[in-house]
Image (cartoon, rainbow, N blue to C red; front, side, top):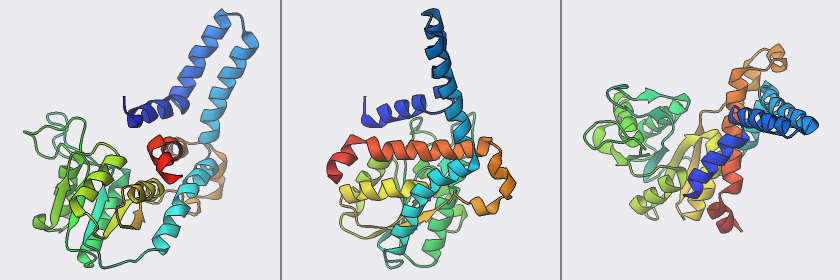
Length: 262
């Protein structure tokens, strides 16, 4: 089992809603063992975690921790004259016939929009779309993230011949490793969601890929909502908190990254 899969499983178990289910199961087991106080404590911790992460100020703080790093990286790197624009998968869900005949845009679709804008601004002569798919099918179109992104970028006006696909990768480490194999020492503009950019830059440095940060899809935008919404838990805030927490877990506990960063 790869580190990537282990991290996915662990992050799912320690975060809501799975953590709440785990707490409930442990609570029942402890009650059977007549450990009532401990059972109550475990259940309360599970509920408290879910509730705390559901408050907008908490989700904003978690997102800001990641997105501020992305802003700093973007401000510190060149903004033009690259050999390629690299777009990491995550902004689109591939087509999965017969249930989903066409790709589906996700919250990170800003990645492709920014890539198209950079191409039109002549930041680079080509766009590399990177992303495979666990359910990819060789005989079906757009069943990888790369193929789906290509389709969308063409609809946005990027010429098909200017788009290069990398469709083998299943995670960020593979994204950047395979892209490095394609571009070598050339300079690339890296496009991904702001919360994802710190980890992407760390991996790019480890893979010795020369990148400049072009973050998008900023989510820690507390100034865009009425102040009173800060005091009410919400599903949107919980989703944002979970996205940030999973990224923080991956950033800090992927041993392959940590070992190289020492």
